[in-house]
Amino acid sequence: MSEPTRALAAAAAERIAEQGEFDFVADFSSRVTVGILFRMMGLPERDHRVIRRQVILSVSTDKAARGRNDDHIAAFKELGNFISEQVAIRRVSPVTTSSALWPKRRSTATSSRSAKSF
Image (cartoon, rainbow, N blue to C red; front, top):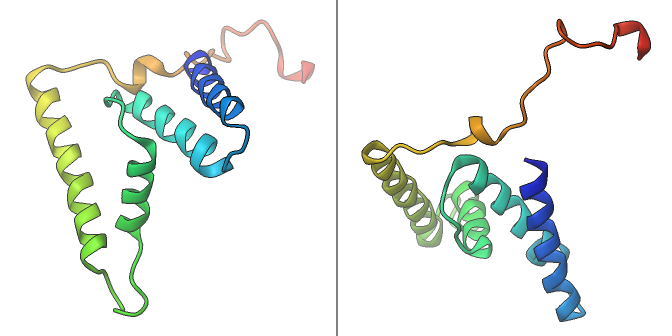
């Protein structure tokens, strides 16, 4: 997973270098985080700003209304619809997901290092 992560970070850094100024969360952190999570789950690329906004709205409440407003509800429904569509697609055509993207964990039983070497 480290190489895809490096590629996402490098691409974000290149865009930032071209801009000159940047917002760390909007231009780097959000882009890389959403990219990694979507890649790990095998989801198609989406606009990281839209996804981040929908997630934040989905878990937030409107203090004035003491609950969720129409924007919160719409964001939650949009995310739910996206996930439902992806599940339906996977049922028809299963794909390899996160288990293939995670690095293989080295077994401690076959490791040439002993616990004393740490």
